Amino acid sequence: MATTLLSSHLEQISACAASISELEFPKPKQFENSLLSQHDITALIRDTEIHERALFSIAPPPLPSKPDLNASAGSSYNARASATPHASRAPKRNTAVAAVLGRDLFRKVREADGTTSTNSYGAKNRSKGELNVEVLLQGASRLSEVYPVAGAAGRIEKLRARFEQLSANIAHYEDRVARNAKQLDGMYARQGWEEEDDDGESIVGGVDTGAASGMTREDLEREEKEIRDLERKKKGLESRVSEMEKDLGGLMR
Image (cartoon, rainbow, N blue to C red; front, side):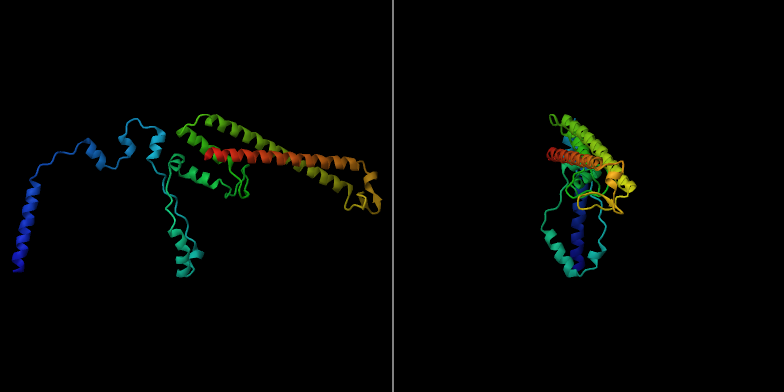
């Protein structure tokens, strides 16, 4: 009896399949094919602009991070406890800005908030909170090309020229301070000044070398004053660079 019931069901399925195969369906048209294919949505829109395509684009996924061996060595309880705070967070979404900048430049801009290990002059050991002006200028230029803002391009060029000038001035004064400090150390070494008495006069073997040598104390004080002036100018230039970095931060926002 079970075989009879199964046979009846199979006959009904075969009849339904035959009736469906005999039906006539219209051929797929152009718009239906475009919807069924893996086309970019902006390809369906005519004469799209760069900023319009960026709105419908997503940045490439971030590179996978290396697993932390020390974290994996912990207990399963610690792993669950550390994962609990992150579970309630909203997933990180790619933005139109990331799509415009690209993965590499977007990562550099995100890292330019002071967490990287390079300073504004290209050297290492960036202090915390210091901005990478070059990367921010590059990102601002890229964004202004896609999303034009009145006066943004001129302002970026002025900031770039100002940054280059201030960087050159700082490098010049740093070199000058180093040369003056080296020259001053050489003067001390040549005169053999190793200690000073209570009045500030240099004493070597009980002889007042400040009066006996050709280099007077006034000359040394003048050199030290010049070094202090250069240090003050250097700090002023660094403060101007910091103000320019704040302007760049406001422009990026």
